[in-house]
Amino acid sequence: MFNRSFETVPLALEIAILAVFVIALVFSMFGQGGGSLYTPTLVLLGFGVLVSVSASLVLNLVTATFATAVYVRQRYVSLPLGALLIPGSVAGAFLGGLWGNQVDTTLLLWVFVAFLVGAGARMLAASWEREGDGATRSRVRLSYDVMAIVVVFSFAVGVLSGLLGIGGGIVLVPFLIFALRVPTKESAGTTAFVVIFSSLAGVLGHSALGHLDVLLILATVVAVAVGGFLGARLMVRVQTKLVRFGFGLLLWVFAVQLVVKLMGWG
Image 1 (tube, rainbow, N blue to C red):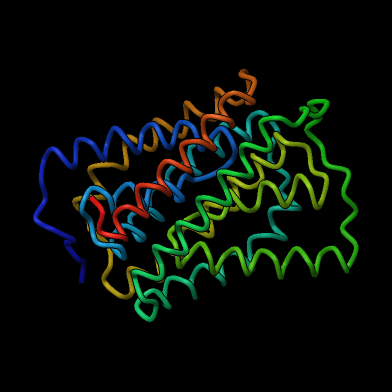
Image 2 (image 1 turned 60 degrees about the vertical axis):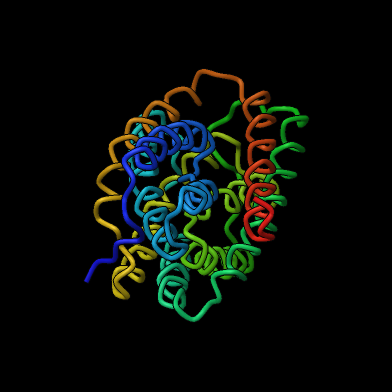
């Protein structure tokens, strides 16, 4: 059984379509599905929290799929590393989706605020960091210890993905870059590949509980497909420092908007 979140207002849907296109365009440049902004955007437009989370996971899935198609052609996807990340991400995302009904939605939104602030700070810091040498092949040695850490970390990210409606890319990319020393573009491409599976698992978990709003998803899915495809193509050609800086500020703006909403100030 599918869920309708509120009495649909055409203007709200039009704004949602434009917003998710822009989000998909920007996030796909970094191997991310865009869930960290899809969910708060839909909530601010009046959709229910759990419906927004489940729709966000579907949009993550579409964005990541079209972005991955571009990254594969550019050889920016490490299939061995992706295969190591997928099982934990999928299992965690499915459990996170199933646990959605057991989590207080107000608490969920406060967690999102903390997430947006932290992610924004990370992206702002990254805007000042020097780019790598453009290599597309990682040199990480996957010892048993490293593989164990990767699996545990991916499971934790998967749970976060299922609960908050994110694909996990905004967490996985920094992990691959700074913990495993994977080149930036390969990190983005590999993460986009992993996000496909973690988002799909989260969608299945939420659909089992009837959280999917079909009209909302159909109204926005084409926009994110186009945005994800174009964003991935832009990533190959454009320097990302200014985009990262603006992206970090945008995350903070959404965090402030959610705080205003939660505190009842607006």
